[in-house]
Image 1: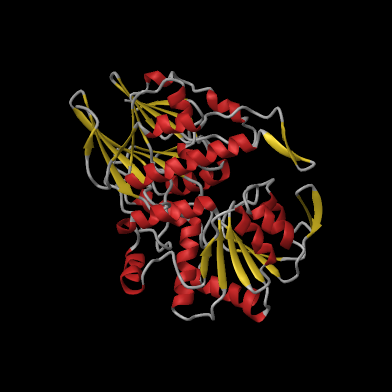
Image 2: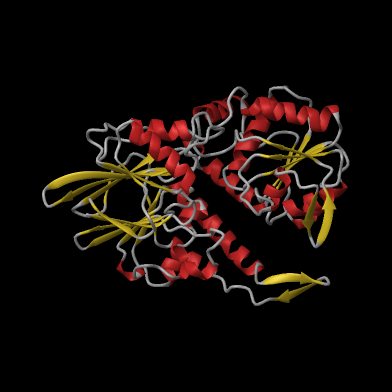
Length: 462
């Protein structure tokens, strides 16, 4: 058995790992690599022949894990793609959204007209997404599925996103049974809407993400307490507007559910809430479809009070006309809009009209990468560039990490420490910046685990 780390090696994006057995090749995830030094077209250059891959196993729907699947199919992959049912549905949404993003980058606004540029060609189009979705085979959680005579697959709930799973492979090779697990992205306990990550069975090898290695989530206040304080200050004590940039899939649903609880339980007087994201609307329907996979708290709320994602003062915008009309809504309100790092989507319209508004608060509930507009606001830039204009920042900027869907350093340590160090032969750390990996790896080594931090393309005989 041979493992090659082809993606998310000492970086966060582009997850892709190849497991080779006798005459059988398994690709674990096929994510888009969008690190700053990576050109979009570099994702066309697979380090293997896509036609040689027998099966793809997908841990969850996020683009850094699923985003290059249509390219793989377009270049010759003909096998099955195995995932949980919610992951399949959310992946289709995100891949179709990627097509729209690719096409939008080929155009720019010029004196009110659309003008073509010489931007990069799309990696794939809608047809390729549809071809990809035809290859999906869905498997439920904790239901062993035999790939062939050698390999059995089990998806274990790992939190992080609806449908996200750690992958456990039981492999019989030449009379010897071994187990290898791939964590995908590890969630955190008590996250709104989602179930807690489940413990993994004992394995021989563990490929573990390290995104939050060396970092710890803030403690002391709950999600609802932080939201209640912020809304009270931004919309009630000072009758202004609260803008919350949120990723459309996962983060928005967790936020809406938390707001639902606050207002339904009478913790605050009603404040109008607008969710301004078509993608979030579609994703919310998928969350409703898989209601039985949501957290026990969310299901109890549903049985007692109704739809987790609907309440009296909530409105989902349906089109661009309704979105633009929000700039003329002068009552106190909350606007939830994508994208989370402010680099595109309808959120830029709301920022354009509100960044210089003393009565506006912008609450960041997610990570903003260096170089993004979100990062510039968080570091305190007094002037920012939006829509070809330099605008002074008079709005109040706030941030909380309580909506992060990633487990922190303690969560990752606890996940690995569930494994008997005498039985677990090696931990491979992936999907993290070098500093995060080093911090997590150092602590695991101190606990007696053997740790590898692979370079891209590094091969291991297991």
